[in-house]
Length: 420
Image (cartoon, rainbow, N blue to C red; front, side, top):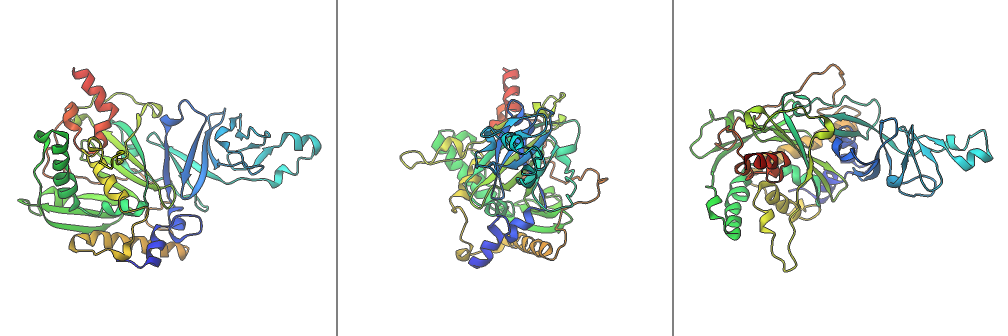
């Protein structure tokens, strides 16, 4: 268990907090490129800051504070100009660096324009990769946007799924260091849900964990498991799959690899991204796909209905089951009352890694996975060919929709329609 003081240190992400200072050393996904296809602005909440993503008339993308520093009107209603975003209240214009470059009435009264030179608003760097916009809120010099494999690999079809999960990001990440929950939450509970939905034919047998293991590696932690009937020669153990520090999980299989990315919006809400690639071996037809054509869709967050009953039809897949496990812990789980067991050693290792990297930042050092070399090439992250004794076969329409957010996949929906 953790003391309340230690729990605060690991979970609070606002400006000036130890964890907020660590997380500001990284690029974080903030939007799918396709979200900006038919709009000029998009409200963004990131690390406790209210921001606006915008595209000006030149096509350049910027990220600035949500409220105009003049009279605090929201710049979500801002008007794009050739360079920057104009507040519609009094016409003040801000460029991508947050400088006020026009103040129409003030400029008329004072042709020297020196008042506007004293006005700035917070502005942050934006970069694009793999159909996603990323933001960097930290100090100079700005690190390289990491070329993680799924964002830069060729010959795949991509899709982006999103949800706002109303809880702290750390309890979501700790789930990724907990292999044993799979046989209970995603198998035993899933079968209970299938009974509630009247579809017992979709039940799964429970795959019993005999051993779990965790190894620190260059980019984070590899988690491993041995299921009943397996040995260390099986890829569930021999390969495993990585938790990429500080907030990525690579999941899926080699045919449908995915990132699950947990980005703190604030202390109590997490922007959850599922970023999935389909290879030709998955059976998904591969065709040219521009960044604006990569599908973006939202996953439902399970709720209790008006009578207090769960939404069973949202709990028949891993994402729904995981989300209820996280949000029912509270906005920030009280780790002072937990009782960790042998299966939780991955969680202990992750917390230790968080603290070590907080301390590195406090000493003025770069934390893990902050890259400075612009010539760095694609970073490949190993994952099983077929996780949990599965087979690396092709996806077949709705048969593939029993795992994670693939239930809601527009790419698989298109395959379903084509097969009819």
